[in-house]
Image (cartoon, rainbow, N blue to C red; front, side, top):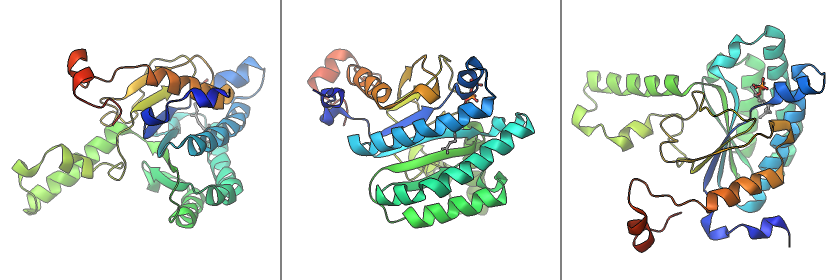
Length: 253
Ligand code: FPP
């Protein structure tokens, strides 16, 4: 029996969010430059995207570059941007073929023009795909996203097109970058760090958090399946008691 068969298809998360950490350490442990770890990390990206499509996950969000990552040495930032452009160029045919639809969240305008162009083209090419939604978080800061949403709402209130009493969870969520996606039910962080690092702070409110010591370049399909099996053993209570959950609510609906 393949390990894939041990997954309960009725208890899959619709949306998985991943913090792909440990590329730099993985490379340094091998006496290589940090950038080498990012190159190897792309192989894991490809494998995890394919595995999610195969398993039937609907949404996968990858933290590819945080707003804080701009503060890294210029050589590393440039290498990451170049890697992003080259990877999109190389993978676009497969994304198309595998029915993957690409989305971007984050401060898109702050990316180099060539990245914006490549990403816009890739989004257009995959726009009608109906399989996995691959969401790349680029130049992403969750605090920034929340502040921007608040500002947009405040502007509408000031202009008289929205009333303060109409602001609820739904209105607020409509102003986040992620307005078109359900919240992630599972968040995976690789490389042994136990932090959220300004990632989807609002959207992860009820997500199950899974941490593994495996560095991102070593994180492959079997590791993803392990995370899913772990997720499927958890009881998602949403603030209720265990007894209420067992008698009333479908857990993974
Ligand atoms: C974290 O490792 C990883 C990143 C900041 C970049 C992630 C990028 C990739 C996997 C490649 C490009 C992605 C796509 C979608 C084409 P780190 O450098 O913080 O590692 P460290 O904590 O060991 O220093």
